[in-house]
Image (cartoon, rainbow, N blue to C red; front, side, top):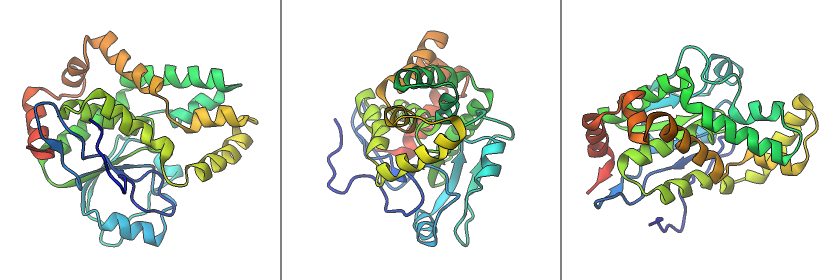
Length: 263
């Protein structure tokens, strides 16, 4: 079920973390998610000129920023020259902090960090601000305007949930969707990113050992499963959550599939 590619989905960047194409997966009933239209990443606040050229080459029509006001103010994204994509965001907060930073505040070791991340993922579907921008994300995808990029702070938690929901809508097998989610742990220069995170969080949230930091800075199947379970427990199914909370009814689902799946 998982696509076989020699080059992988990652785009070469210098200071944008985890920029990759999340298309290419087979879907139920036949067909495959189109490539060259769906991109995900961390924020672009420190993007180099080379990175901006890469972003420009994606010909984006929508950028979906899952961060809240305070996060966008702290790390304002750089844009390439001539950038004219519509930027979708929520005016307010989608999280007090990025989920991995929230989890860091109360974590004393790898075990408590892991539990904190599981709890945060389970609560993410209840966040009004995040749900608001997710509605805009699916509306933009249904419009068929062109390529989009979805990101948050690290491009792993809120972005991971958004992408998993889209894969579900498109009929990507849950195992393949999980595979895509876990690719964050294998992104280019991931060790450099973890080292930077250790230095940053160590000063702000108290010294953390390497095992704890790897939990906070990475992704784990149990995290995403917690979000999936929360939707099912609270709404009866992921489809019910999509329809009742995010406005993705059968008609919108078909429009999204028409735009993003090659038969």
